[in-house]
Length: 175
Image (cartoon, rainbow, N blue to C red; front, side):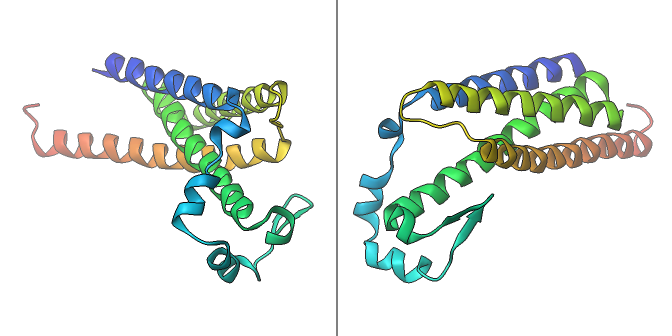
């Protein structure tokens, strides 16, 4: 059963990584969601919500004045996508290493974080190579934060699974 889980999480982690690389290879115009935003909400509604809220990424001030209303919402959705995609990747990576090497926490965290950061840097490098895209170090940091959130979730899930299995064995010694 343990070997089956190792291949399961490895398959998901590799598949998810390939999906990330595919999305990184798409041009900005292929990924834009502005036409959908224009159908759902007006610029005035966006300005009403976000006009007084500047966002700071590294040393850049992100505002409606800089990006426009739809540009700001699209920017926030894109950054949220970084967090989501790398959270899922972090979860699957930590579950893979948990199933393959166990809960040796230092080795587990070292391998998981290193793997995630290498994938994140490769992803941003691939974006840098594509015309109309820009790979940014701040995105590697954001990806890392999403990945660490996913890793924490994966560690908690692994602990709970192990704890539930031990509890069940002690309650039912015939297993």
